Length: 227
Image: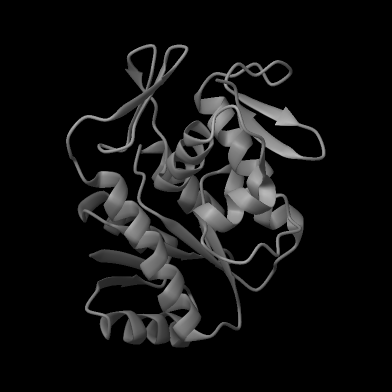
């Protein structure tokens, strides 16, 4: 597994490199955004860990650059700031997770492993097993999504959210349940994480935000996909 680590604080970048190398990951370390972009363009990466506050292009801009290139590997943001607006901005442009500085390196390793497990599962190609919902095809085994026979470019996290709702279609799924089943962590969210990811999925499904066809909002309760 190839992981990009971008942080202009050398001590932090070196610490992250040390702990992840101990887990046998290949680390491509950079202290500048220009170096990070060069790595993105030349190495087949499986993950990026990006500091938000770097000179030149900041971590948000690098994350957007990754997603604009059609790359769906997980992106974890490192940040000293954790205001809701910053978190929502990162999630909106395609970040998968946030870790606040100072952080426990063992927590970082756990988050990395969790995200990579999801990414690996997403990319495994197996026999056909699809869910069909009014022009939407979700293949649980190949982890692919088609809308009117055209591929929908979902991140592994977005796919897992859509798949969970599809597997429970006809039922209202609360934000708490969705978070705990997909992230597999205790729900302690107060920064609209689920809402932002649902909004991104709807955009990719070309949903009318006022009258979405696929993912319905049940106000005060959660989300559902109709049978």
